[in-house]
Image (tube, rainbow, N blue to C red):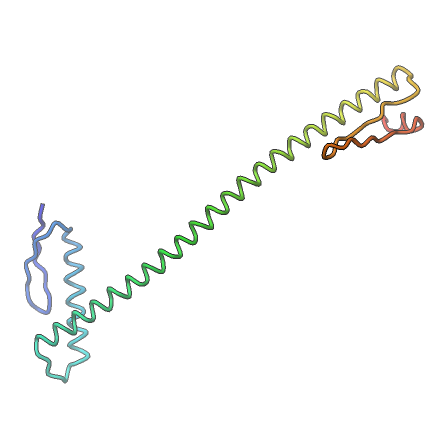
Length: 158
């Protein structure tokens, strides 16, 4: 559906018909009117024919368009770089979450192993077994054993 709007440009009423919103058409007309006034104010004492004035207005509008287009292009590049950085950070977050899960599992396994040792130690002390069990910890496929002297049995439990 076409919108019919009457706008004022350079003191003249102009009828417009467009599918664009009336507010948009008024904004465009206001922009053109402003550019005409700028050209007239810069060349107030000069006598310029309508053709030259139209050319100057068109150049002025083209200048605004190209500057806006350049700014848009720079913003697009910035947006792309920020998007790439965001994606890189998301990958890093995922990697760190996996690392946290792995470390949490290792911690839980170590806690379980420690509790097993404590239980075995308590059981050996309760039964009067002369030697406490020797705890071991698995580190990178190597088993490291930590023998505890009998004299420390009671001290470690209490």
